[in-house]
Image (cartoon, rainbow, N blue to C red; front, top):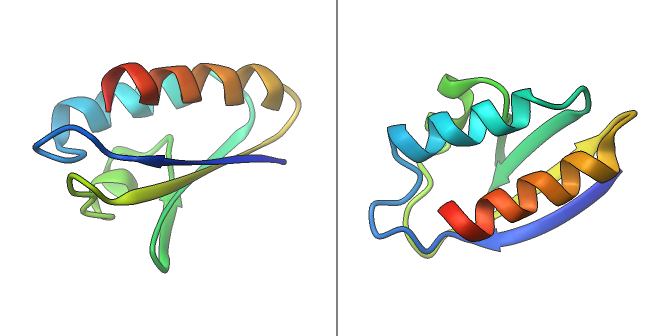
Amino acid sequence: MKKFEYTIKDALGLHARPAGLLVKCASGYKSAVTLTRGDKSGDAKRLFAVMGLAVKCGDVISIAVDGEDEDAAYQGIKAFCESNL
């Protein structure tokens, strides 16, 4: 399992458009991807789970990747976050 933390920089937080792009990115990998904010977590491959976390600008999220392609998923999702969130 690989894990990283990221602070949301988008002024609107993790709203519908970037949440949808994150789900699309995570869904491209076989590994399980879990997004956590505070004491809530959800499957990063499900839009309603991501939106339900109500991530706002300045919030720190934790993303855990576990599975057969976790190295590629970790790198890809981390790069996505840095360029889009």
